[in-house]
Length: 218
Image (tube, rainbow, N blue to C red; front, side, top):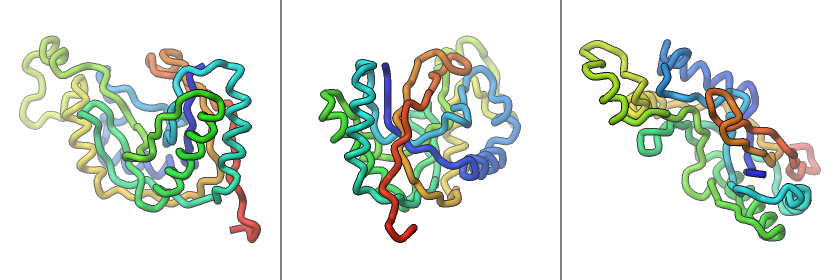
């Protein structure tokens, strides 16, 4: 089983992000063409640690260890802010300073739990925590060979090469700041490659581990 640990934004946070994306990308967001694969809304997440392939029987043990490891982590506020790309092929929204420390604490807890179970935990919160929005599925050189002469003056960027479009969207999203939400749990998620929409991965939540609530209710 291929798993990772993650935090999911609330539906309200995701809806606010949709409004920003519509203003940034317009019609291309709804119909980007064959060169872009969007992350399904229900699968939008912030990965805190990636574990890769683990034995199915080890997952319940990991959930128990993760539960113990997050026992001292209080719920915290998080906010999506700014935009960027990885090598022009992955389009993402970042995380504001508010929430980064909490995500890193969760990554450390996931690493601790995974170590007890004897498998890996690649920290995805230590560098640049982010929520992946879309990926380019066709390389620029393939697009140029297959579609010579496209993209004349005044045309929208050709999404058969997502990199140019992603760079524009990332710059437009650089000033974005979404509403804050309270992170109250961390999820253990199964990822089945190629089983999701448009050949993407299918994510299934295996367990949701609550953080330690404040004794004062805040």
